[in-house]
Amino acid sequence: MRDIQELIKNVEKYKTMLVQRSFKSKKNTVAYVVSNGQPRILKWFVPGLKQNMDIEYNVLKIGFSDLAIPSPFEKDTENNVLVMSYIMGENVCDFINNPATALEEKKKVVCLLADWFVHFHTFFKNEDEIRLRGDATLKNFILSRGRIYGVDFEESRIGRPGADCATLCVSLLSTDPMFIDEKFQLCQTFLDAYRKSAKWDIENSNAEISYALLERIQWRPKDEELLRKYATRIKDKGLQVARHNF
Ligand SMILES: Nc1ncnc2c1ncn2[C@@H]1O[C@H](COP(=O)(O)OP(=O)(O)O)[C@@H](O)[C@H]1O
Ligand SMILES: [Mg+2]
Image 1 (tube, rainbow, N blue to C red):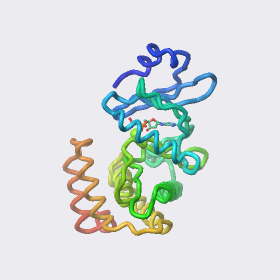
Image 2: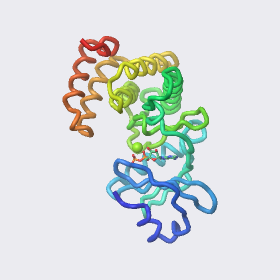
Image 3: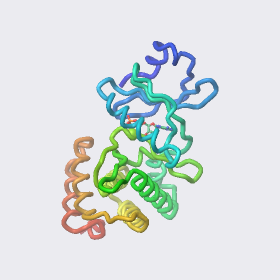
Image 4: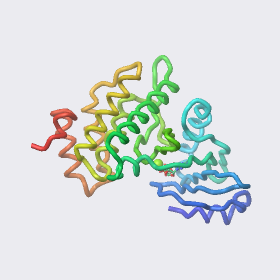
């Protein structure tokens, strides 16, 4: 992964920006900077992912005034950089996996996440299709003053809302601490809250979660055995039963 300094040193318009923090990213280079006294996020896409930049920019541009997502400021196609607003807060993955936080607090946040998804899917729905956020992992959400914000829309696509929900459940189950009872409870809370406020049904959630667990193996080859074990259990017995060890 490239260092953000490479961009800031070499491109005139970024030279005055002050880097406050670099984020861990799967492929792109993401940094929180201050530009003319204003907090900003720079997302520098790897050269092959120009199309992803266009997808993310369009989601932000169309949705930012109605949804809890960053505001886009600039799409710099020459350098493959998106400039957007900075959302201050705690990463939801860290919040959910903090052993010191009470389960009731985590359940509240998971209900807010479900509301966020229902808003996103409702906003981007038309008569015959629904746009998914894509890459629906806990890391792509920020808890800011009691509100949930979503970030990272480069994998947004048309699909079944159940696929986004399944990815979120898999992120709950398979981030450390993995597959503990609390995680199964949080998945159930999430799915119940989503179903309660969505105007459509999500079908076969056990099969979707099972499939999404198998997909996760490509990113987590070391955990292949565990992921396969739970994928089979959830598909055959359902979330509720799979949670008990037997
Ligand atoms: N607008 C933003 N405000 C605050 N933090 C952000 C923002 N955008 C991204 N981040 C942080 O940077 C991380 C990486 O950004 P992301 O867009 O997810 O890149 P990647 O797609 O390469 O993973 C996110 O997980 C999040 O913690
Ligand atoms: Mg991300």
